[in-house]
Length: 326
Image (tube, rainbow, N blue to C red; front, side, top):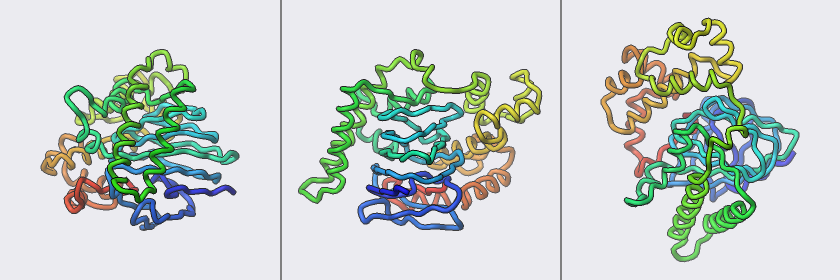
Protein backbone atom coordinates (compact mmCIF):
# COMPACT_ATOMS: atom_id res chain seq x y z
CA UNK A 1 0.00 0.00 0.00
CA UNK A 2 1.31 3.42 -0.94
CA UNK A 3 0.56 6.16 1.55
CA UNK A 4 2.49 9.39 1.07
CA UNK A 5 1.26 12.69 2.48
CA UNK A 6 3.17 15.79 1.50
CA UNK A 7 1.00 18.01 3.65
CA UNK A 8 -1.99 16.42 5.32
CA UNK A 9 -3.89 13.21 4.82
CA UNK A 10 -7.62 12.75 4.71
CA UNK A 11 -8.62 15.56 2.39
CA UNK A 12 -12.35 15.19 1.97
CA UNK A 13 -14.85 15.25 4.74
CA UNK A 14 -17.37 12.55 3.98
CA UNK A 15 -15.21 9.47 3.87
CA UNK A 16 -16.77 6.37 5.35
CA UNK A 17 -14.93 3.51 6.98
CA UNK A 18 -11.56 3.53 8.72
CA UNK A 19 -8.92 6.10 7.82
CA UNK A 20 -5.24 6.33 8.67
CA UNK A 21 -4.26 9.98 8.74
CA UNK A 22 -0.95 11.66 9.32
CA UNK A 23 -0.83 15.27 10.49
CA UNK A 24 2.46 16.89 9.50
CA UNK A 25 3.72 19.86 11.46
CA UNK A 26 3.38 22.06 8.41
CA UNK A 27 -0.07 20.87 7.42
CA UNK A 28 -3.61 21.30 8.67
CA UNK A 29 -4.02 22.19 12.32
CA UNK A 30 -6.46 20.78 14.85
CA UNK A 31 -7.34 17.60 12.98
CA UNK A 32 -9.27 15.35 15.28
CA UNK A 33 -11.93 12.69 15.27
CA UNK A 34 -15.33 13.53 16.68
CA UNK A 35 -18.05 10.92 16.76
CA UNK A 36 -16.31 9.08 13.94
CA UNK A 37 -16.06 12.15 11.69
CA UNK A 38 -13.00 14.16 10.81
CA UNK A 39 -13.11 17.79 11.74
CA UNK A 40 -10.62 20.58 11.18
CA UNK A 41 -10.13 24.29 10.98
CA UNK A 42 -8.68 26.09 7.99
CA UNK A 43 -6.47 28.64 9.72
CA UNK A 44 -5.36 30.58 6.66
CA UNK A 45 -6.93 32.13 3.58
CA UNK A 46 -5.83 29.20 1.43
CA UNK A 47 -4.10 25.84 1.79
CA UNK A 48 -2.32 23.40 -0.49
CA UNK A 49 -2.14 19.63 -0.04
CA UNK A 50 -0.16 17.14 -2.12
CA UNK A 51 -1.36 13.60 -1.54
CA UNK A 52 -0.29 10.28 -2.99
CA UNK A 53 -2.00 7.13 -1.73
CA UNK A 54 -3.51 3.83 -2.74
CA UNK A 55 -6.38 2.63 -0.59
CA UNK A 56 -10.08 1.95 -0.72
CA UNK A 57 -12.11 5.08 0.06
CA UNK A 58 -15.79 5.94 -0.29
CA UNK A 59 -17.35 9.37 -0.13
CA UNK A 60 -20.81 10.84 0.13
CA UNK A 61 -21.78 14.05 -1.64
CA UNK A 62 -20.51 16.97 0.42
CA UNK A 63 -19.44 20.61 0.16
CA UNK A 64 -17.05 23.06 1.81
CA UNK A 65 -17.28 26.68 2.89
CA UNK A 66 -14.28 27.36 0.66
CA UNK A 67 -13.64 26.87 -3.05
CA UNK A 68 -11.72 23.73 -3.97
CA UNK A 69 -9.26 23.14 -6.81
CA UNK A 70 -8.28 19.56 -7.64
CA UNK A 71 -5.18 19.03 -9.77
CA UNK A 72 -5.25 15.39 -10.83
CA UNK A 73 -1.82 13.83 -11.41
CA UNK A 74 -2.34 10.08 -11.60
CA UNK A 75 -4.76 7.29 -10.76
CA UNK A 76 -8.16 6.15 -11.90
CA UNK A 77 -10.75 8.60 -10.63
CA UNK A 78 -14.16 9.86 -11.67
CA UNK A 79 -15.25 13.08 -9.98
CA UNK A 80 -18.94 13.86 -9.55
CA UNK A 81 -19.95 17.52 -9.29
CA UNK A 82 -23.64 18.45 -9.11
CA UNK A 83 -24.63 15.18 -10.78
CA UNK A 84 -22.10 15.32 -13.64
CA UNK A 85 -19.27 12.79 -13.92
CA UNK A 86 -15.76 13.85 -14.96
CA UNK A 87 -13.44 10.98 -15.90
CA UNK A 88 -10.06 12.48 -15.12
CA UNK A 89 -6.87 12.40 -17.15
CA UNK A 90 -3.38 13.37 -15.88
CA UNK A 91 -3.11 17.09 -15.14
CA UNK A 92 -6.80 17.77 -15.46
CA UNK A 93 -7.97 20.48 -13.08
CA UNK A 94 -11.40 20.70 -11.46
CA UNK A 95 -12.95 23.89 -10.08
CA UNK A 96 -15.45 23.20 -7.30
CA UNK A 97 -17.35 26.16 -5.85
CA UNK A 98 -18.26 26.40 -2.19
CA UNK A 99 -21.97 25.76 -2.83
CA UNK A 100 -21.48 22.79 -5.14
CA UNK A 101 -21.81 19.25 -3.83
CA UNK A 102 -19.26 16.77 -5.07
CA UNK A 103 -17.59 13.43 -4.46
CA UNK A 104 -14.75 11.40 -6.01
CA UNK A 105 -15.08 7.77 -7.05
CA UNK A 106 -11.63 6.23 -6.65
CA UNK A 107 -10.39 2.95 -8.11
CA UNK A 108 -7.91 1.69 -5.51
CA UNK A 109 -6.16 -0.61 -8.00
CA UNK A 110 -3.99 2.37 -8.99
CA UNK A 111 -2.00 4.95 -7.02
CA UNK A 112 -3.96 8.19 -6.70
CA UNK A 113 -1.87 11.37 -6.70
CA UNK A 114 -3.35 14.86 -6.63
CA UNK A 115 -2.74 18.39 -5.46
CA UNK A 116 -5.73 20.00 -3.78
CA UNK A 117 -6.02 23.68 -2.98
CA UNK A 118 -8.61 25.29 -0.72
CA UNK A 119 -9.29 29.01 -0.84
CA UNK A 120 -11.85 31.17 0.88
CA UNK A 121 -13.90 33.33 -1.54
CA UNK A 122 -13.22 36.34 0.66
CA UNK A 123 -9.49 36.07 -0.03
CA UNK A 124 -10.03 36.14 -3.78
CA UNK A 125 -12.48 39.02 -3.51
CA UNK A 126 -9.99 40.96 -1.39
CA UNK A 127 -7.45 40.71 -4.21
CA UNK A 128 -9.85 41.68 -6.99
CA UNK A 129 -9.52 44.94 -8.89
CA UNK A 130 -12.05 46.94 -10.88
CA UNK A 131 -10.81 45.24 -14.05
CA UNK A 132 -10.11 41.72 -12.80
CA UNK A 133 -12.34 39.36 -10.85
CA UNK A 134 -10.37 36.36 -9.57
CA UNK A 135 -13.67 34.56 -8.89
CA UNK A 136 -14.49 34.58 -12.62
CA UNK A 137 -13.37 30.99 -13.22
CA UNK A 138 -15.56 29.66 -10.40
CA UNK A 139 -18.47 31.80 -11.57
CA UNK A 140 -18.13 30.48 -15.11
CA UNK A 141 -17.92 26.87 -13.90
CA UNK A 142 -21.14 27.31 -11.92
CA UNK A 143 -23.04 29.21 -14.62
CA UNK A 144 -22.03 26.94 -17.51
CA UNK A 145 -22.15 23.78 -15.36
CA UNK A 146 -18.73 22.77 -16.59
CA UNK A 147 -15.89 22.41 -14.07
CA UNK A 148 -13.04 20.81 -16.01
CA UNK A 149 -9.82 22.41 -17.24
CA UNK A 150 -7.97 20.18 -19.71
CA UNK A 151 -4.77 21.87 -20.88
CA UNK A 152 -2.28 21.77 -23.71
CA UNK A 153 1.26 20.64 -22.87
CA UNK A 154 2.68 24.16 -22.62
CA UNK A 155 -0.11 25.20 -20.24
CA UNK A 156 0.51 22.09 -18.14
CA UNK A 157 4.18 23.03 -17.85
CA UNK A 158 3.24 26.55 -16.74
CA UNK A 159 0.91 25.18 -14.04
CA UNK A 160 3.50 22.61 -12.92
CA UNK A 161 6.12 25.30 -12.46
CA UNK A 162 3.78 27.52 -10.46
CA UNK A 163 2.71 24.68 -8.19
CA UNK A 164 6.33 23.64 -7.61
CA UNK A 165 7.22 27.19 -6.59
CA UNK A 166 4.13 27.43 -4.40
CA UNK A 167 4.94 24.16 -2.60
CA UNK A 168 8.49 25.36 -1.96
CA UNK A 169 7.25 28.71 -0.67
CA UNK A 170 4.87 26.87 1.64
CA UNK A 171 7.86 25.37 3.48
CA UNK A 172 10.14 28.38 3.29
CA UNK A 173 11.17 30.33 6.39
CA UNK A 174 13.00 32.96 4.37
CA UNK A 175 12.27 36.65 4.71
CA UNK A 176 8.82 37.65 3.39
CA UNK A 177 7.95 34.02 2.69
CA UNK A 178 4.32 34.70 3.49
CA UNK A 179 4.16 37.50 0.92
CA UNK A 180 5.82 35.30 -1.70
CA UNK A 181 3.39 32.46 -0.97
CA UNK A 182 0.39 34.75 -1.42
CA UNK A 183 1.87 36.22 -4.60
CA UNK A 184 2.46 32.79 -6.13
CA UNK A 185 -1.03 31.65 -5.24
CA UNK A 186 -2.53 34.72 -6.92
CA UNK A 187 -0.38 34.00 -9.99
CA UNK A 188 -1.75 30.45 -10.02
CA UNK A 189 -5.34 31.69 -9.83
CA UNK A 190 -4.67 34.21 -12.61
CA UNK A 191 -3.36 31.44 -14.86
CA UNK A 192 -6.39 29.26 -14.14
CA UNK A 193 -8.67 32.14 -15.06
CA UNK A 194 -6.80 32.89 -18.28
CA UNK A 195 -6.97 29.25 -19.36
CA UNK A 196 -10.55 28.53 -18.30
CA UNK A 197 -12.11 31.79 -19.48
CA UNK A 198 -10.78 31.01 -22.96
CA UNK A 199 -12.24 27.50 -22.90
CA UNK A 200 -15.37 26.91 -24.94
CA UNK A 201 -17.30 24.56 -22.67
CA UNK A 202 -19.83 23.80 -25.42
CA UNK A 203 -17.06 22.00 -27.33
CA UNK A 204 -15.90 20.08 -24.27
CA UNK A 205 -19.22 18.60 -23.11
CA UNK A 206 -18.31 15.24 -24.63
CA UNK A 207 -15.69 14.88 -21.92
CA UNK A 208 -18.32 14.52 -19.18
CA UNK A 209 -21.07 12.03 -18.49
CA UNK A 210 -24.52 13.06 -17.35
CA UNK A 211 -28.23 12.59 -17.92
CA UNK A 212 -29.85 15.65 -19.48
CA UNK A 213 -33.15 15.20 -17.63
CA UNK A 214 -31.47 14.87 -14.25
CA UNK A 215 -29.23 17.84 -15.06
CA UNK A 216 -32.33 19.92 -15.81
CA UNK A 217 -33.91 18.85 -12.53
CA UNK A 218 -30.78 19.78 -10.59
CA UNK A 219 -30.70 23.20 -12.29
CA UNK A 220 -34.34 23.75 -11.41
CA UNK A 221 -33.76 22.77 -7.78
CA UNK A 222 -30.77 25.10 -7.47
CA UNK A 223 -32.85 27.99 -8.84
CA UNK A 224 -35.96 27.36 -6.71
CA UNK A 225 -34.66 26.40 -3.28
CA UNK A 226 -36.99 28.86 -1.56
CA UNK A 227 -40.06 27.36 -3.24
CA UNK A 228 -41.95 24.11 -2.91
CA UNK A 229 -39.81 21.21 -4.12
CA UNK A 230 -41.84 18.17 -3.26
CA UNK A 231 -41.24 14.98 -5.19
CA UNK A 232 -44.81 15.12 -6.46
CA UNK A 233 -44.45 18.67 -7.79
CA UNK A 234 -41.14 17.82 -9.49
CA UNK A 235 -42.51 14.66 -11.08
CA UNK A 236 -45.42 16.67 -12.47
CA UNK A 237 -43.19 19.44 -13.80
CA UNK A 238 -40.77 17.06 -15.52
CA UNK A 239 -43.43 14.60 -16.75
CA UNK A 240 -42.13 11.60 -14.85
CA UNK A 241 -43.80 9.21 -12.48
CA UNK A 242 -42.88 9.69 -8.85
CA UNK A 243 -41.20 6.29 -8.66
CA UNK A 244 -39.25 6.74 -11.92
CA UNK A 245 -38.03 10.19 -10.84
CA UNK A 246 -36.73 8.93 -7.48
CA UNK A 247 -35.15 5.83 -9.03
CA UNK A 248 -33.53 7.74 -11.91
CA UNK A 249 -32.19 10.50 -9.66
CA UNK A 250 -30.62 8.02 -7.24
CA UNK A 251 -29.10 6.03 -10.10
CA UNK A 252 -27.53 9.08 -11.77
CA UNK A 253 -26.34 10.96 -8.66
CA UNK A 254 -25.83 8.30 -6.02
CA UNK A 255 -28.06 10.16 -3.56
CA UNK A 256 -31.80 10.40 -3.04
CA UNK A 257 -33.75 13.34 -4.44
CA UNK A 258 -35.00 14.29 -0.97
CA UNK A 259 -31.48 14.23 0.52
CA UNK A 260 -30.16 16.33 -2.36
CA UNK A 261 -32.81 19.02 -1.85
CA UNK A 262 -32.22 19.16 1.92
CA UNK A 263 -28.45 19.37 1.45
CA UNK A 264 -28.70 22.18 -1.10
CA UNK A 265 -31.10 24.11 1.14
CA UNK A 266 -28.70 23.76 4.06
CA UNK A 267 -25.79 24.95 1.93
CA UNK A 268 -27.84 28.02 1.03
CA UNK A 269 -28.73 28.49 4.70
CA UNK A 270 -25.06 28.48 5.70
CA UNK A 271 -24.34 31.11 3.08
CA UNK A 272 -27.14 33.31 4.39
CA UNK A 273 -25.94 32.86 7.97
CA UNK A 274 -22.46 33.95 6.93
CA UNK A 275 -24.06 37.09 5.49
CA UNK A 276 -25.54 37.84 8.92
CA UNK A 277 -29.23 37.40 8.12
CA UNK A 278 -31.64 36.73 11.03
CA UNK A 279 -32.22 33.02 11.61
CA UNK A 280 -35.96 33.10 10.88
CA UNK A 281 -35.21 34.84 7.58
CA UNK A 282 -32.52 32.26 6.79
CA UNK A 283 -35.03 29.45 7.33
CA UNK A 284 -37.62 31.08 5.06
CA UNK A 285 -35.21 32.00 2.25
CA UNK A 286 -33.66 28.53 2.19
CA UNK A 287 -37.04 26.87 1.71
CA UNK A 288 -37.82 25.37 5.10
CA UNK A 289 -41.49 25.46 6.00
CA UNK A 290 -40.90 26.41 9.62
CA UNK A 291 -38.03 27.35 11.88
CA UNK A 292 -38.05 24.18 14.00
CA UNK A 293 -37.76 21.99 10.90
CA UNK A 294 -34.81 24.10 9.76
CA UNK A 295 -33.03 23.80 13.13
CA UNK A 296 -33.53 20.02 13.27
CA UNK A 297 -32.20 19.54 9.74
CA UNK A 298 -29.21 21.80 10.39
CA UNK A 299 -28.28 20.02 13.63
CA UNK A 300 -28.67 16.60 12.04
CA UNK A 301 -26.42 17.52 9.13
CA UNK A 302 -23.76 19.63 10.84
CA UNK A 303 -23.89 18.51 14.47
CA UNK A 304 -24.71 21.98 15.80
CA UNK A 305 -27.56 24.47 15.73
CA UNK A 306 -27.57 27.40 13.27
CA UNK A 307 -26.97 29.77 16.20
CA UNK A 308 -23.93 27.82 17.39
CA UNK A 309 -22.59 27.78 13.83
CA UNK A 310 -22.97 31.55 13.62
CA UNK A 311 -21.22 32.04 16.97
CA UNK A 312 -18.33 29.84 15.83
CA UNK A 313 -17.97 31.94 12.71
CA UNK A 314 -17.65 35.03 14.87
CA UNK A 315 -15.00 33.44 17.10
CA UNK A 316 -12.42 33.13 14.31
CA UNK A 317 -10.80 36.04 12.52
CA UNK A 318 -10.94 36.34 8.73
CA UNK A 319 -13.82 33.84 8.54
CA UNK A 320 -11.22 31.14 9.17
CA UNK A 321 -13.62 28.42 10.23
CA UNK A 322 -14.11 25.27 8.27
CA UNK A 323 -15.80 22.28 9.80
CA UNK A 324 -14.51 19.33 7.81
CA UNK A 325 -17.87 17.69 8.36
CA UNK A 326 -19.83 20.34 6.48
